[in-house]
Length: 365
Image 1 (cartoon, one colour):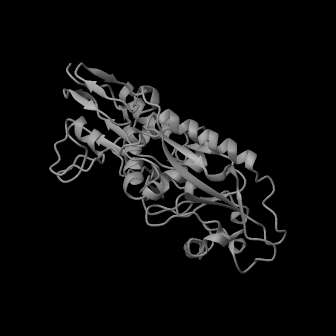
Image 2 (cartoon, rainbow, N blue to C red):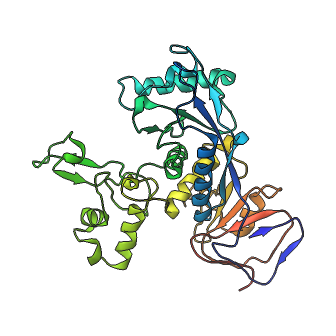
Image 3 (cartoon, helix red, strand yellow):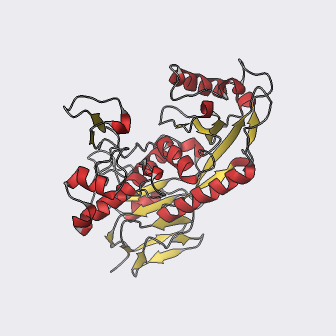
């Protein structure tokens, strides 16, 4: 629910549901097309029209999450960087690097980022946006992300840049989301480590994504039965509704690799909390407003407005504290966890209130 700039007095109850708010926190993205040094041109098929459809698809997914995030494509145009003959210098030296399989791929990624930051004019680098570069990856269908501590995102100019869930998946990493299968194992029949990928005898699901509401996952599991068997030793149809929902949260998850089998637009509540904490703390330069968490069930000693309830830090205990923390101007969001906040109050500034995990009531019940 968005409150404009007028005096709002809450003495009776006001109810907030997940679909009531409309104001957005804007995340800026700056997208560069690295030119082929042999021709001086973009990769075949790389165009503003295609990427504009990608942006629309990403924003549709973000809108469905109800957290108030939207992407702003800076300039609504791809920035051409590099040029003819730049085989050893400038951005085009990275045009055809396979940053995944080359022995020095990681080092070249770091070099690419450092050169871009130090030469922003040449590389089109923006200090106030997520920097995405479209490269060829030697023809491979790879994409490379940066977790907090690094910044550059590299996507391929074929299926990568043209697929909304692929680009948003990489942006998810940028905001500190790991793969749902993080920590998974591939084993031989004798339980020794296997290096044959999805041709191995055994797959042990990983659960090291630091997310409480996701179960084990594996990039070689190809359907809901695989996920169900890997977690509960039962087929999907034989699970309770609660367990089926847990499987679905993995099967449809943006941060999984199940996009190989079907569309995966979903993020869980805990994943969205982690994204938000990272946007608030790790990546303030690329966004407009921030989110302030409020949870009446959390009594942190020194609340900071972040999502995780801890002794030091965590959500505010009252809606009033969230409102007080929000900056004037309407760019901040106060995100209420479910419950009745019996806090008659007067709000005199523009802000957005959201409740995405269940209903929240403010004022006298």
